[in-house]
Length: 342
Image 1 (cartoon, one colour):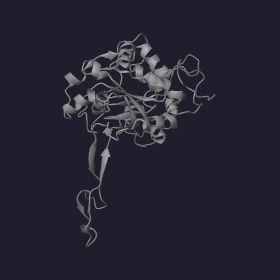
Image 2 (cartoon, rainbow, N blue to C red):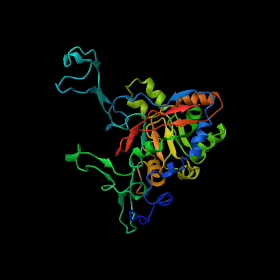
Image 3 (spheres, rainbow, N blue to C red):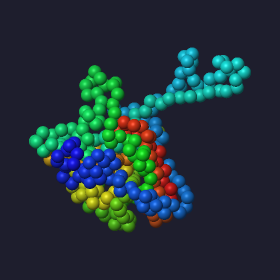
Image 4 (cartoon, one colour):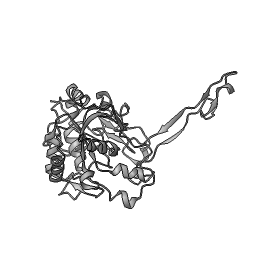
Protein backbone atom coordinates (compact mmCIF):
# COMPACT_ATOMS: atom_id res chain seq x y z
CA UNK A 1 0.00 0.00 0.00
CA UNK A 2 1.37 3.37 -1.01
CA UNK A 3 1.34 6.13 1.59
CA UNK A 4 -0.30 8.54 -0.87
CA UNK A 5 -3.66 7.42 0.52
CA UNK A 6 -5.06 5.43 3.42
CA UNK A 7 -8.66 5.72 2.28
CA UNK A 8 -9.92 5.58 -1.28
CA UNK A 9 -13.19 6.91 -2.73
CA UNK A 10 -16.08 4.49 -2.64
CA UNK A 11 -16.40 2.62 -5.93
CA UNK A 12 -13.04 3.79 -7.21
CA UNK A 13 -10.32 1.72 -8.90
CA UNK A 14 -7.52 3.24 -6.84
CA UNK A 15 -4.88 0.62 -6.21
CA UNK A 16 -6.57 -2.02 -8.36
CA UNK A 17 -3.80 -1.80 -10.95
CA UNK A 18 -0.98 -1.16 -8.49
CA UNK A 19 -0.13 1.49 -5.91
CA UNK A 20 1.67 3.74 -8.40
CA UNK A 21 -0.58 3.15 -11.41
CA UNK A 22 -1.11 6.17 -13.69
CA UNK A 23 -3.19 4.49 -16.41
CA UNK A 24 -6.40 3.60 -14.62
CA UNK A 25 -8.80 1.69 -16.80
CA UNK A 26 -6.44 1.96 -19.78
CA UNK A 27 -4.92 -1.14 -18.23
CA UNK A 28 -7.90 -2.93 -19.83
CA UNK A 29 -6.83 -1.76 -23.29
CA UNK A 30 -5.00 -5.03 -23.87
CA UNK A 31 -3.50 -6.56 -27.03
CA UNK A 32 -6.72 -8.56 -27.33
CA UNK A 33 -8.73 -5.33 -27.47
CA UNK A 34 -6.42 -4.04 -30.21
CA UNK A 35 -7.02 -7.26 -32.15
CA UNK A 36 -10.77 -6.86 -31.68
CA UNK A 37 -10.51 -3.33 -33.08
CA UNK A 38 -8.47 -4.49 -36.04
CA UNK A 39 -11.06 -7.20 -36.74
CA UNK A 40 -13.63 -4.44 -37.36
CA UNK A 41 -11.71 -3.23 -40.43
CA UNK A 42 -13.56 -4.62 -43.45
CA UNK A 43 -13.79 -1.81 -46.00
CA UNK A 44 -10.50 -0.01 -45.38
CA UNK A 45 -12.32 3.33 -45.13
CA UNK A 46 -10.95 5.95 -42.75
CA UNK A 47 -12.68 8.85 -41.00
CA UNK A 48 -10.90 11.81 -39.46
CA UNK A 49 -12.60 12.47 -36.12
CA UNK A 50 -10.94 15.81 -35.41
CA UNK A 51 -12.35 19.26 -35.93
CA UNK A 52 -9.93 21.73 -37.49
CA UNK A 53 -8.02 22.84 -34.40
CA UNK A 54 -9.08 26.48 -34.81
CA UNK A 55 -12.70 25.43 -34.16
CA UNK A 56 -15.00 26.25 -32.43
CA UNK A 57 -13.71 29.80 -32.92
CA UNK A 58 -13.57 32.59 -30.36
CA UNK A 59 -13.91 31.67 -26.70
CA UNK A 60 -17.65 31.27 -26.31
CA UNK A 61 -17.46 27.69 -25.02
CA UNK A 62 -14.76 28.48 -22.47
CA UNK A 63 -13.52 32.04 -21.80
CA UNK A 64 -10.11 30.71 -20.67
CA UNK A 65 -9.38 28.89 -23.93
CA UNK A 66 -8.50 30.64 -27.18
CA UNK A 67 -7.81 29.61 -30.79
CA UNK A 68 -4.28 28.64 -31.79
CA UNK A 69 -1.86 31.31 -32.98
CA UNK A 70 0.58 30.39 -35.76
CA UNK A 71 3.56 32.58 -36.57
CA UNK A 72 7.01 32.18 -38.10
CA UNK A 73 10.13 31.38 -36.18
CA UNK A 74 12.83 34.06 -36.18
CA UNK A 75 16.31 33.73 -37.69
CA UNK A 76 19.47 34.88 -35.94
CA UNK A 77 19.28 38.12 -37.93
CA UNK A 78 15.84 38.84 -36.49
CA UNK A 79 14.13 38.18 -39.84
CA UNK A 80 10.91 36.13 -39.84
CA UNK A 81 11.59 32.64 -41.15
CA UNK A 82 8.75 32.62 -43.69
CA UNK A 83 9.37 32.49 -47.45
CA UNK A 84 12.98 33.24 -46.53
CA UNK A 85 15.47 33.21 -49.40
CA UNK A 86 18.52 31.39 -48.06
CA UNK A 87 20.66 33.04 -50.74
CA UNK A 88 20.45 36.20 -48.62
CA UNK A 89 22.67 34.41 -46.09
CA UNK A 90 24.39 31.75 -48.21
CA UNK A 91 25.53 32.83 -51.68
CA UNK A 92 24.12 30.78 -54.56
CA UNK A 93 21.70 28.86 -52.28
CA UNK A 94 18.37 28.04 -53.93
CA UNK A 95 16.42 27.13 -50.79
CA UNK A 96 13.27 28.97 -49.76
CA UNK A 97 12.45 28.25 -46.11
CA UNK A 98 9.23 28.54 -44.13
CA UNK A 99 9.23 27.50 -40.49
CA UNK A 100 6.59 28.27 -37.89
CA UNK A 101 5.49 27.83 -34.30
CA UNK A 102 2.10 27.50 -32.65
CA UNK A 103 0.73 28.76 -29.37
CA UNK A 104 -1.91 26.21 -28.39
CA UNK A 105 -4.52 26.02 -25.69
CA UNK A 106 -4.31 22.26 -25.41
CA UNK A 107 -8.01 21.69 -24.72
CA UNK A 108 -9.47 24.25 -27.10
CA UNK A 109 -10.72 21.88 -29.81
CA UNK A 110 -10.75 18.09 -30.32
CA UNK A 111 -8.97 16.81 -27.23
CA UNK A 112 -8.17 14.22 -24.61
CA UNK A 113 -8.40 14.89 -20.88
CA UNK A 114 -5.65 13.26 -18.84
CA UNK A 115 -6.31 11.95 -15.34
CA UNK A 116 -4.54 15.07 -14.04
CA UNK A 117 -7.25 17.31 -15.51
CA UNK A 118 -9.85 16.99 -12.73
CA UNK A 119 -9.29 15.93 -9.13
CA UNK A 120 -11.33 16.37 -5.98
CA UNK A 121 -11.17 17.40 -2.35
CA UNK A 122 -11.15 14.04 -0.57
CA UNK A 123 -10.13 12.71 2.84
CA UNK A 124 -7.36 10.39 1.65
CA UNK A 125 -5.77 10.18 5.11
CA UNK A 126 -9.00 9.23 6.87
CA UNK A 127 -8.45 11.99 9.42
CA UNK A 128 -11.45 14.11 8.53
CA UNK A 129 -9.50 16.64 6.46
CA UNK A 130 -10.26 16.78 2.71
CA UNK A 131 -7.16 17.33 0.58
CA UNK A 132 -6.85 18.20 -3.12
CA UNK A 133 -5.93 14.95 -4.85
CA UNK A 134 -6.20 13.22 -8.21
CA UNK A 135 -6.63 9.63 -9.38
CA UNK A 136 -4.89 7.03 -7.22
CA UNK A 137 -4.14 9.67 -4.58
CA UNK A 138 -1.60 11.70 -6.53
CA UNK A 139 -1.35 15.04 -4.76
CA UNK A 140 -1.94 18.60 -5.87
CA UNK A 141 1.19 20.62 -5.16
CA UNK A 142 3.67 17.74 -5.21
CA UNK A 143 2.61 15.43 -8.06
CA UNK A 144 0.66 18.01 -10.08
CA UNK A 145 2.50 21.31 -9.70
CA UNK A 146 2.12 24.88 -10.85
CA UNK A 147 1.41 28.43 -9.76
CA UNK A 148 -1.55 29.09 -7.45
CA UNK A 149 -1.66 32.90 -7.13
CA UNK A 150 -2.45 35.52 -9.75
CA UNK A 151 1.01 37.08 -9.59
CA UNK A 152 2.57 33.78 -10.75
CA UNK A 153 0.01 32.90 -13.42
CA UNK A 154 2.66 32.79 -16.17
CA UNK A 155 4.95 30.38 -14.32
CA UNK A 156 5.36 26.79 -15.57
CA UNK A 157 3.06 23.95 -14.52
CA UNK A 158 3.64 20.22 -14.77
CA UNK A 159 1.82 16.99 -14.12
CA UNK A 160 4.66 14.97 -12.61
CA UNK A 161 2.20 12.07 -12.60
CA UNK A 162 -0.93 11.28 -14.64
CA UNK A 163 0.18 13.52 -17.54
CA UNK A 164 -1.15 13.22 -21.06
CA UNK A 165 2.02 11.43 -22.17
CA UNK A 166 0.74 8.28 -20.47
CA UNK A 167 -1.97 8.01 -23.13
CA UNK A 168 0.55 8.54 -25.91
CA UNK A 169 2.78 5.83 -24.48
CA UNK A 170 -0.17 3.46 -24.30
CA UNK A 171 -0.98 4.06 -27.96
CA UNK A 172 -4.73 4.71 -27.67
CA UNK A 173 -5.66 2.18 -30.31
CA UNK A 174 -8.42 -0.37 -29.89
CA UNK A 175 -12.08 -1.03 -30.52
CA UNK A 176 -14.39 1.95 -30.67
CA UNK A 177 -18.13 1.68 -30.07
CA UNK A 178 -20.55 4.32 -31.33
CA UNK A 179 -23.69 5.28 -29.39
CA UNK A 180 -25.76 7.48 -31.69
CA UNK A 181 -27.70 9.78 -29.37
CA UNK A 182 -28.41 12.22 -32.20
CA UNK A 183 -30.30 9.62 -34.25
CA UNK A 184 -32.82 9.37 -31.42
CA UNK A 185 -32.79 12.85 -29.87
CA UNK A 186 -31.89 15.21 -32.69
CA UNK A 187 -30.44 18.60 -31.68
CA UNK A 188 -32.49 18.84 -28.49
CA UNK A 189 -30.63 19.84 -25.33
CA UNK A 190 -31.23 16.70 -23.25
CA UNK A 191 -29.54 15.45 -20.09
CA UNK A 192 -29.33 11.74 -20.87
CA UNK A 193 -29.62 9.46 -17.87
CA UNK A 194 -29.21 5.71 -17.66
CA UNK A 195 -32.81 4.79 -18.51
CA UNK A 196 -32.80 6.79 -21.74
CA UNK A 197 -29.32 5.56 -22.64
CA UNK A 198 -30.42 1.97 -22.06
CA UNK A 199 -33.37 2.42 -24.41
CA UNK A 200 -31.06 3.75 -27.13
CA UNK A 201 -28.55 0.91 -26.65
CA UNK A 202 -31.33 -1.67 -26.87
CA UNK A 203 -32.98 -0.02 -29.88
CA UNK A 204 -29.71 0.01 -31.83
CA UNK A 205 -28.38 -3.33 -30.60
CA UNK A 206 -25.24 -1.71 -29.15
CA UNK A 207 -23.17 -3.68 -26.66
CA UNK A 208 -20.30 -2.19 -24.66
CA UNK A 209 -17.68 -4.60 -23.32
CA UNK A 210 -14.67 -4.15 -21.01
CA UNK A 211 -11.79 -2.45 -22.80
CA UNK A 212 -13.95 -0.61 -25.36
CA UNK A 213 -13.58 3.09 -26.15
CA UNK A 214 -17.11 4.50 -26.28
CA UNK A 215 -18.09 7.42 -28.54
CA UNK A 216 -21.28 9.43 -28.04
CA UNK A 217 -22.59 11.12 -31.19
CA UNK A 218 -24.72 14.15 -30.32
CA UNK A 219 -24.32 16.24 -33.48
CA UNK A 220 -22.83 19.19 -31.57
CA UNK A 221 -19.50 19.32 -33.44
CA UNK A 222 -21.30 19.15 -36.78
CA UNK A 223 -23.33 22.20 -35.80
CA UNK A 224 -20.13 23.98 -34.74
CA UNK A 225 -18.68 23.40 -38.20
CA UNK A 226 -21.72 25.08 -39.70
CA UNK A 227 -21.05 28.18 -37.57
CA UNK A 228 -17.68 28.65 -39.32
CA UNK A 229 -15.60 29.75 -36.30
CA UNK A 230 -18.25 32.23 -35.15
CA UNK A 231 -20.42 30.32 -32.68
CA UNK A 232 -23.59 31.99 -31.49
CA UNK A 233 -23.69 31.95 -27.65
CA UNK A 234 -27.48 31.85 -27.69
CA UNK A 235 -27.34 28.64 -29.72
CA UNK A 236 -24.30 26.66 -28.55
CA UNK A 237 -25.26 26.72 -24.88
CA UNK A 238 -28.67 25.22 -25.63
CA UNK A 239 -27.73 22.61 -28.21
CA UNK A 240 -27.60 18.81 -28.34
CA UNK A 241 -27.49 16.08 -25.75
CA UNK A 242 -25.03 15.36 -22.98
CA UNK A 243 -24.84 12.77 -20.24
CA UNK A 244 -26.48 13.46 -16.89
CA UNK A 245 -23.55 13.30 -14.49
CA UNK A 246 -25.91 13.43 -11.51
CA UNK A 247 -27.61 10.14 -12.46
CA UNK A 248 -26.20 7.51 -10.14
CA UNK A 249 -27.46 4.66 -12.33
CA UNK A 250 -25.59 6.14 -15.29
CA UNK A 251 -22.37 6.43 -13.29
CA UNK A 252 -22.80 2.84 -12.13
CA UNK A 253 -23.20 1.75 -15.76
CA UNK A 254 -19.90 3.45 -16.64
CA UNK A 255 -18.29 1.59 -13.76
CA UNK A 256 -19.82 -1.80 -14.55
CA UNK A 257 -19.31 -1.62 -18.33
CA UNK A 258 -15.51 -1.67 -18.08
CA UNK A 259 -15.18 0.96 -20.82
CA UNK A 260 -11.70 2.53 -20.89
CA UNK A 261 -12.50 5.90 -22.45
CA UNK A 262 -15.65 7.97 -22.85
CA UNK A 263 -15.71 10.31 -25.85
CA UNK A 264 -18.26 12.78 -27.20
CA UNK A 265 -18.57 15.39 -29.92
CA UNK A 266 -19.92 17.93 -27.43
CA UNK A 267 -18.13 20.33 -25.09
CA UNK A 268 -17.81 18.24 -21.92
CA UNK A 269 -19.33 14.77 -22.53
CA UNK A 270 -21.69 15.56 -19.66
CA UNK A 271 -24.28 18.33 -19.58
CA UNK A 272 -22.55 21.47 -18.34
CA UNK A 273 -23.55 23.19 -16.15
CA UNK A 274 -24.64 20.02 -14.42
CA UNK A 275 -28.10 19.57 -12.99
CA UNK A 276 -28.40 20.67 -9.33
CA UNK A 277 -26.72 18.38 -6.81
CA UNK A 278 -27.30 17.74 -3.11
CA UNK A 279 -25.02 19.37 -0.56
CA UNK A 280 -21.26 19.45 -1.11
CA UNK A 281 -20.61 17.99 -4.57
CA UNK A 282 -18.64 18.34 -7.79
CA UNK A 283 -19.64 20.86 -10.46
CA UNK A 284 -18.47 18.27 -13.04
CA UNK A 285 -19.83 15.04 -11.55
CA UNK A 286 -19.13 12.82 -14.54
CA UNK A 287 -15.57 14.17 -14.78
CA UNK A 288 -15.10 13.43 -11.10
CA UNK A 289 -16.46 9.91 -11.50
CA UNK A 290 -14.43 9.08 -14.61
CA UNK A 291 -11.13 10.92 -14.17
CA UNK A 292 -10.87 10.96 -10.38
CA UNK A 293 -12.52 7.73 -9.27
CA UNK A 294 -12.26 5.26 -12.15
CA UNK A 295 -9.28 6.43 -14.19
CA UNK A 296 -11.39 6.68 -17.36
CA UNK A 297 -10.09 9.28 -19.83
CA UNK A 298 -12.52 11.65 -21.51
CA UNK A 299 -12.46 12.86 -25.12
CA UNK A 300 -14.31 16.05 -26.03
CA UNK A 301 -15.30 17.96 -29.17
CA UNK A 302 -14.55 15.08 -31.52
CA UNK A 303 -16.16 15.23 -34.97
CA UNK A 304 -18.25 12.05 -35.04
CA UNK A 305 -21.10 12.80 -37.47
CA UNK A 306 -19.66 11.39 -40.75
CA UNK A 307 -18.58 8.18 -39.00
CA UNK A 308 -21.89 7.81 -37.13
CA UNK A 309 -23.82 8.35 -40.36
CA UNK A 310 -21.80 5.68 -42.18
CA UNK A 311 -22.08 3.18 -39.34
CA UNK A 312 -25.86 3.58 -39.13
CA UNK A 313 -26.26 3.24 -42.90
CA UNK A 314 -24.25 0.02 -42.80
CA UNK A 315 -25.83 -1.50 -39.69
CA UNK A 316 -22.65 -1.31 -37.64
CA UNK A 317 -21.54 0.36 -34.42
CA UNK A 318 -17.95 -0.89 -33.93
CA UNK A 319 -14.71 0.23 -35.58
CA UNK A 320 -10.96 0.46 -35.13
CA UNK A 321 -10.08 3.66 -33.26
CA UNK A 322 -6.58 5.14 -33.27
CA UNK A 323 -6.30 8.33 -31.21
CA UNK A 324 -2.94 9.17 -29.63
CA UNK A 325 -2.52 12.61 -28.05
CA UNK A 326 0.62 14.70 -28.28
CA UNK A 327 3.43 13.08 -26.33
CA UNK A 328 3.90 16.25 -24.30
CA UNK A 329 5.26 15.36 -20.85
CA UNK A 330 3.59 17.14 -17.98
CA UNK A 331 0.50 18.39 -19.82
CA UNK A 332 -2.97 17.73 -18.42
CA UNK A 333 -4.70 17.67 -21.82
CA UNK A 334 -3.89 17.48 -25.50
CA UNK A 335 -5.27 17.95 -28.99
CA UNK A 336 -5.73 14.73 -30.88
CA UNK A 337 -6.44 13.81 -34.49
CA UNK A 338 -8.33 10.52 -34.11
CA UNK A 339 -8.80 8.15 -37.01
CA UNK A 340 -11.57 5.57 -37.26
CA UNK A 341 -11.16 2.71 -39.71
CA UNK A 342 -14.09 0.52 -40.76
